[in-house]
Image (cartoon, rainbow, N blue to C red; front, side):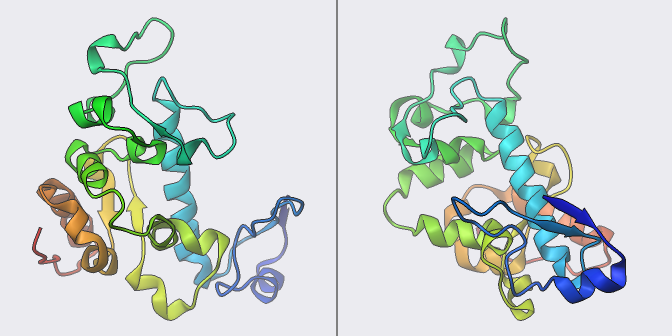
Length: 207
């Protein structure tokens, strides 16, 4: 359910400390627009969630109709076996690597628009907390979190989601999860491009 109300009333009804999209099997989400200024971070996360869904829809084995499909281990077909006769071509950034085609892994990894980053996740399986990673990416949408934590979390999708040059990684995310981004220098370059456009200092982190 989406409701449009005067801005003065919206500010009194929503709080960034509460989820923007409460999760519950029998409770439909309700979103009130316009969002209050302190909900900008969750609006950004909503856009990231949309980007993830868009990337998933481009993959031929995406199984949106299966409950908990993202938690099932699978492999993607080798790139040469993809047929484009029934769907649009898969962007090069999403075409599966050798590891994706041979090593069982969870489906959510396939939507990351960077082959090295995907391989890093597959190789590091079991050494990171997936729920914590999800929370730091789009958790504010479903859980809510204090304003003071906004700068410590998240990624931003600025352009077509399959183009890694349109993604920006927050400084806190880099500090916490950068060890999973070895070999992804172009992601840091993209991040600093967007920071420069806002007049911010570039991030200097070890990859």
